Image (cartoon, rainbow, N blue to C red):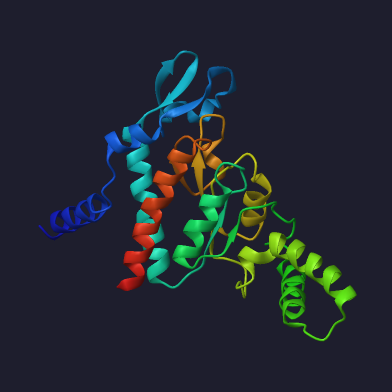
Length: 236
């Protein structure tokens, strides 16, 4: 009887995330890549093909998404750090917006090699960037040069300037484009969450969301759900 109660409570917790198949379809999560680019390991998350385009099974997406949200909820409740990574032109603005609303570190421009595996060096660059922003005693001629350097460093390190240590988990929006972030996380034994499109090996990450990683509507739907979970967990 106790086991049945626990099963019901677990099921209810997952239902609370309000993952709706119809809403996912409207956001275009189901549209993968052309069949010629399909990774064989993603076939178990597909429902078929339409016009030579692989179609993702949204029932399976919902199932995996709930597991991922459960993990994120636990992560936040334990005050652990989640790093968002998304550098595609069409979604990098959204990544920055959601990260700032949730007070999360993020990378939405180029991933700097060593961000995780050589964090001590990256940390020194971040401190230099912070010190540079506080400088006031310089000439007009020096100002233009310093301001340009600040802008360049803001692009590279602005999203991670609050990081004191390497993150506990990395959430990658574009697993192919940001494969280096995944490799660095794995080398440091950091858990990875990833949006897995049909051209990706889903086994590269610990928690996946089988979905379209190109369309802004798809990524927005996913990140909005993540935001809801994070903000609710922080209130509690």
